[in-house]
Every structure is written in structure tokens, then in C-alpha cells.
Image 1 (cartoon, rainbow, N blue to C red):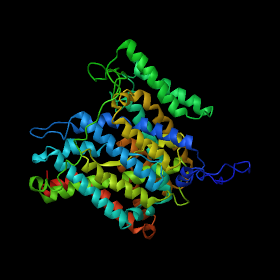
Image 2 (tube, rainbow, N blue to C red; image 1 turned 45 degrees about the vertical axis):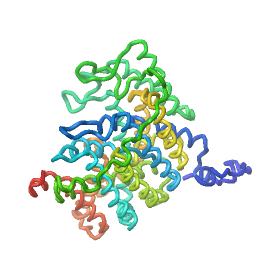
Image 3 (cartoon, rainbow, N blue to C red; image 1 turned 60 degrees about the vertical axis):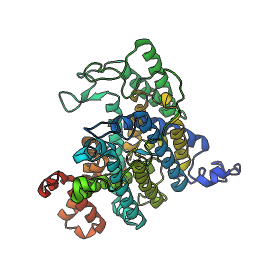
Image 4 (spheres, rainbow, N blue to C red; image 1 turned 30 degrees about the vertical axis):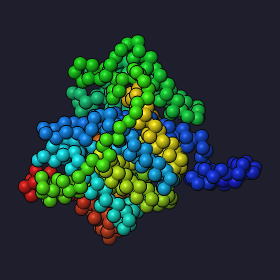
Length: 488
């Protein structure tokens, strides 16, 4: 963390008096400026804006006799509304540069696993999300969630940051179709070769950001996203590539086509708000199934945010000597409230986004960046056509660059000590390889416990680490447990 005094410049000269905004968010104290916070907030928004397209696509999945809670436009508006409010809350209450939105993974579980099973409606599924959010909030208020976080060894916290760095870099490469599933688990481009204009846009954005970054140009990530979007729009206007389709158009644009037709402004409809049924699923699936589903939702939310806030704090040099961010409890409270708000808003659990690290990479260090991101989410309800112009290929170069920045923390792990290095290694590799932050954290916890027991150092394991490991063992074996219990 910067040690620059708020009232002095780095040359020792008297600085201008801090504004009320500066004092509230401790901007100068954290070595930042209002301009950097605004840029960081804008970058975070653009790296997360895909959720405004993807969440409606997932939650509008129909089932036999089970209708979605609204049209894709209504779900998009609800997604932006809840994300905007919760991200602003994170900035004001926790003063942390971390944004929230509907969580990928949880929304897929709602749409593809819960809704439609034995007549469970989307409203019933959102009720389960509210329940798990309430449980997590209780765990935060009792101090349990924060205590578990602080029980994690510093080496595992560092490994979590590094693993997330690799994970988001892989997300960027996969979303831009630079890396695809092929004859081998993954391959370069299409058939082992880079093809198509969208990939060129990605490479243009990536190397533009690299050049600007090494030349220490302020706003390099934001400049890269904007320039790539402009290039993509020009290419689409000339070549009419259209949307990606694995069979008919494998070199099309991913997520959204960079073109604007009609008015850039659209009036939103918040029809999904309040459409949840707290206990509507009990009579349909039974208490045991309900408990297991809530447990699955809860564990993913419980640990994902822990990993994310550590990674963001490490990138922004905001962690203390034990690897804990400032206002840890406030961060976790807001995140828990966001899970409840997402369910009540009919748009699935809202959670902290690791893409916020892109804004931190741009210079964000305080909650002002989150406020900027939140305001942009609220504005996007009206500017959905403009926001949807940004394809993956224009936004994901930022994730690759931030992945690099987070990866540099790997040198903080003592690789010559296997009792430290092995659990860290397992944590790091499991995140990108299993495509899940939660899986990486769980595997690392279990590996750490096993290694300590093998060394005869079981007494050094914090009691809460034992609890977390037991929960993860259940989490990883949930399917056979359901089979034993006769639960579908």
C-alpha cells in the first residue's frame, strides 16, 4: 500500500487540500487519484458488461411448462439494476474496488439444474437463492465467514491470487475463441490455426494494451477496449461477419455483434423484481433435496468471494501482512446481501467479480471505482444497445493482461519448501483446469491439510480449516451422496 501522505506530494511539497470525495474514499491515502478511480471503474464495467447479455440468455431457458421470469430484455434490465445497486453499495460501505453482478455458475445451476426439476419454477429457484444468501449473511454477522477466511494460510491466499490470474487469462482466451475445445482438450484457434477477423481484433487489442503498458501510458486497458471495439465495428460494417455459431459460423463474433441498429436508448422494464417464492420448492422436491441444493449454492458463493477479494487486494497492494483486505467484514456483508438481492430481483445470486481486477490493473484502489462501475450498470439499463456492441474479442484482452499482472505474485511462494509449494500448486492449477475458483480453493485446502498431516503437524491446522475441508469433501462428492440418499 502506498505510504504517501494525503497532505504531501512525493517531493515533500504541500499538496492541495483533499476534497470531501478524496477523504471519504481515502483516495490519496491509497496512492490513487480520482481520474484513476474513474478509469478503473469504467474498465471494470466493460470487462463485466458481457453479463448483461449472457445472464438473460441463460435465465430465459424454457422448460416444459416452466416459463422464464421475463423476456430477455426484462432479465437484462433486472441484471443491470441489481448489479448497479450492489456495486455502489460495495463502494460506499466497504470502500473496495470490487464490482458485483449475477454470478456465472450459480445462474447456470438455477437454469439447467434447479428450474424445471419436478415442477420447480424459476420463482422457486430464486427463493432457494434468497435462502442461501440469508444463511451466508448470518455466517458473516456471526463472524464465522471472516474467521474461516483469516484461518487460511498466507501461502494459500497467494496461490489463490495466482490461480485466479491464470483462470481469468484462460477465460479471456476461450471467450475470444483464440483457444477452443478440439481434438485435444484445448487447441489453438480453429483446427490448430488462428482464423477470422474477430481473432485479429483480439490480438490487436492485446498487443495494443501490451505496448501501452510497457510504455507506462495511463489508461492502457481502457484505450485497448475502446480501440478494439471501434475496429470491430468497422470490420462488421464492411464484412458482415455476424454472430458466432459452432457449426455455421465458427469465425463470427462471440457474445454480441459489434453493430448498432435503431436507437441507442431503450426504456427498461424491471418485471423480474420480486418474482421469487421462498419455500415454493419444498412440496415439489422435498426437504432433503432442498438442503443439498442450498448447500451447493452456498458453498460456491461462500468461497468464490474470498478468493476474488484476495486477488483484487493483492493486485492493488491493499492487503495487510496476513493477506487480509481492509474492511473484510463489510466486503463479505455486502456480498451476502447481493446474493439475497439477486434472488429477490429474479436474476440469480449476485457475487463479486474477478474481472474487477482489470479495473485495479488500470489503477483503481478505492470504492469510488465501484461506484463508477455501479452507475454505469444503472445507465446500461437505458443504453443496452450501446453496451451490447462490445464483443468478447474487444473486452477479453484486458483479462489476459490482468492475468499476467496477478501471475507475478507467484514469486511470493517459497517453492523450495514442498509443504508450502505443493498445496499452493494444487490450488493454482485446479482453478483454470477445472474452470472454477471454488474447486481450486477446495482442492488447495484439502491438499494443505493432507500435507500437514503427513508431516505430523496436524495440530498446526486451524480448526476452521478442518471444517472447510470437511465441507469441500462433501461438495466434491455431492453426486454419489445424493445417490446414496436416493435424492435426484
